[in-house]
Image (tube, rainbow, N blue to C red; front, side):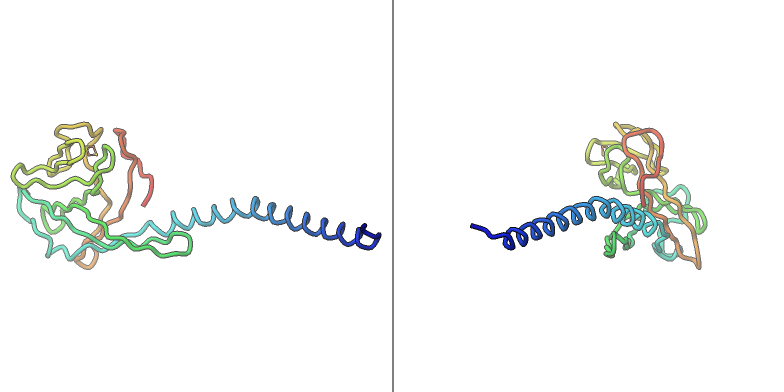
Length: 179
Ligand code: FES
């Protein structure tokens, strides 16, 4: 049988455990949305930046009509929460002159596959559902709802830079959904 002081001790233990349990649960419930919002904001801000592709003079083209695009790549560094993640990204560049260049997102706007250049047909063709685009990015045929998405670019110190953007898929409008 428990005596009076043993009962007192077990009651105190019960209160301690209950208090810690409720406190822990509240900390998690209140803290999680806060941490999640900090992490989400960090993602968005850190990713928007111009990336250097190549010196313009080293990009093939410079004659009209341009019959061949160049596939160029850069390494994108994203800050996800507190971790840096690097990944290679390819973009398509069409160079008409030293100052006139178009950079296309590598993502097909239908459902997000990577399309390729077909030199024989002189067209971009997506292998997933056969959407076809001209070298200017215009939709020729297939289920894609719009032409290829161009990316913001700039020339600085004779180098071409691109701002990598991601767009909503499967709709006629070009809407930015991330970087
Ligand atoms: S994803 Fe390119 S045609 Fe469907």
